[in-house]
Length: 308
Image (tube, rainbow, N blue to C red; front, side, top):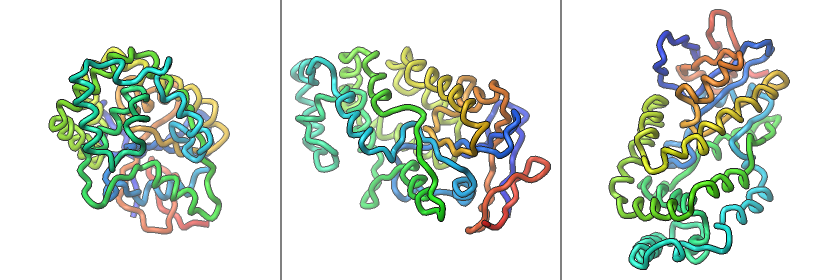
């Protein structure tokens, strides 16, 4: 069975999350994959083509180095608001009461007690609210990054893990958005919990369909209050990553696994790498057999070859 590289004639992306990077003189292809940080565990499954890509590359890059536990723990300070602020300082008493009541009713599913969580930058807290909207039942949640990292470690020659940026840098981005604006968005998110559950399910459904264009469209219309910060949170990071990757790709074969919303569009990583001179083609999988790896074949196809 094969996984085929499709050369689209229109800007519309085919339904795939895995892309092959070649050209510009590099001798071995690299791969770009769109992740979703939180999914129902039953949906966080690696395709055979992605597993084959993991086997074929030298190193794996995530947004941050998820294997660096010390770096992630060190970023906890950066996740907190400056000057000792808390949500109670930013909200009206009735708003704060609603937020506190919401987290009290979900405390069992939170990683930290609310007394600590309310010191975090509100947009980071919103991420915990979004996770509650997954409704995964007894199976719980998982993330594609965790599954990729597990597969990388299971290799005979475990793949090194690295990051395009640090957890402290990511948390620091939210210092550029007024805390009070973030806090109001958190209140709106909680007050509209049913609607946001629907949006979260829709996003997960689009992801499971590997529909990057749908993810881009939903991201564009979702959370209009944050639209002025899209360059800070998305596009500027994409541009920085493209520059970093341009220095890395000539030397090693990589799997770059970043949030799927970073891939599509004119300012997405796919187009930015093409502007750097690389050929970026979608990999359409038809489920290579287990135990096979992806290698480039003539005519823009990927053929399956036994591991060596």
